[in-house]
Length: 286
Image 1 (cartoon, helix red, strand yellow):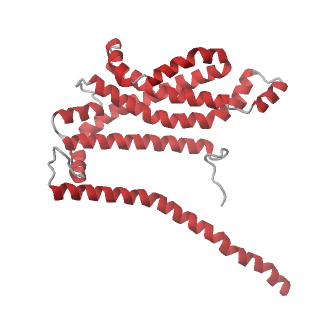
Image 2 (cartoon, helix red, strand yellow):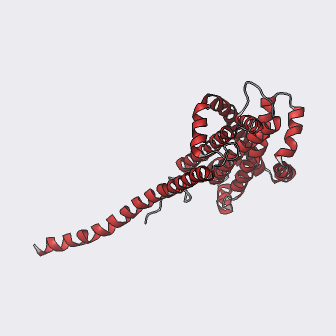
Image 3 (cartoon, rainbow, N blue to C red):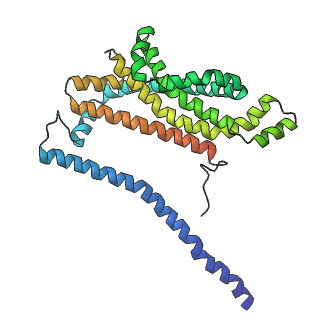
């Protein structure tokens, strides 16, 4: 009888200790979601209150309710333009992944190639896209292709630089070990360098996702041509010319939500590929 009691006592003593961390983790997740939402609600309520109390004209600063109503009423026009901008953004991001990732692999195979071409990639990165976008639109007659090229220029370098850094950051002891066992160059790349560079590549991809949207918007502002397939940036520019400020804010809200969505999707992809093995995404026991 005493033996059974002695065996049960440790398990009873451990139950509260195990339950406390789980309870705290649950509240932590709730607070992590609730606090930003609460701050946003307070900001929007304060904005709407200020506009009504101060009687600010709509053409100066519309309230959130007016912006939301305009977003609903003009949804067909704004959503169609958003799809045009989103198509350019996604294509530019895919081109940046293929071009930047492929060139980074080439750099990892030859230091001479990296030393020869990497400085020119840096020059493309530090040159403001606003300055060269008019030239691109002059030399590339197809407007959509010109917009795509502008957005690609902005998104290309983060993928290239981060992937190159990841490929060059592999432990040299592991490389020496594989070379000692006479592993071929492609085997070192496939089994060692690429897995080691994956977190760096995904980090660059999250940066490039937002930059590709920025590049597409800047290119559309520069193009400034009204066509049946005008992007959302042109609709914002058009609303500004007409002093239709609620519609302009509605377009800005759509662009911001699109940027957040892109970042969220790429963050989810990063977690999906890394959470089972990499420290940056693995869940730690507390």
